[in-house]
Image (tube, rainbow, N blue to C red; front, side, top):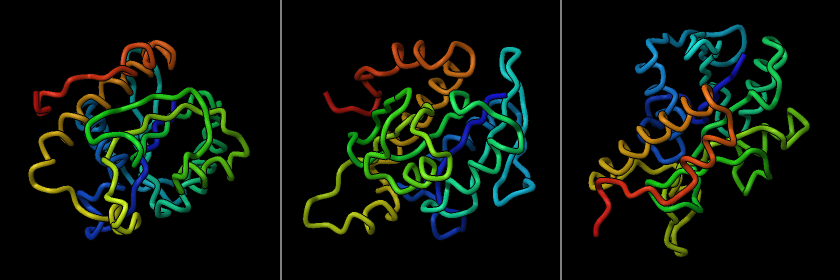
Length: 195
């Protein structure tokens, strides 16, 4: 069983904010695979499905970003998921808008959602996909930035990145983390990039 977690904050006020990119990718995956997300037995939305013969579940934790690990641990224990089959999708301040990066394991990198997951699982040994949301001006408040909505002129790049993240996640499901890293951890020119 492969568990795909998209991180974000529940509620209308957080829709289309930078911190909710993980939710957006899982929603796009659910649409592509025809999976319906419904309330789970814990504080999350969950939808079972299959891709290329592999059983999977898509999950959107409803615990708010800083407590994402509570929902992740619940699913991992309930479905007996190996941590190497946990795939976390989140935003990343340190990547340019539109770029994605897959890592096999690692620290939280200053991301509170990843910090919570590492704390609750007691390990850094789970794969994750980071989606670049751009770096705020040093004069800006970082919390305000991640909770801000994408600008109108950024939406095309964001949609392109979500499509790329969906492809990368499907590659992870079908071919594993190393193949996904080799294929997607390079500078991909987005159609919205300026020359």
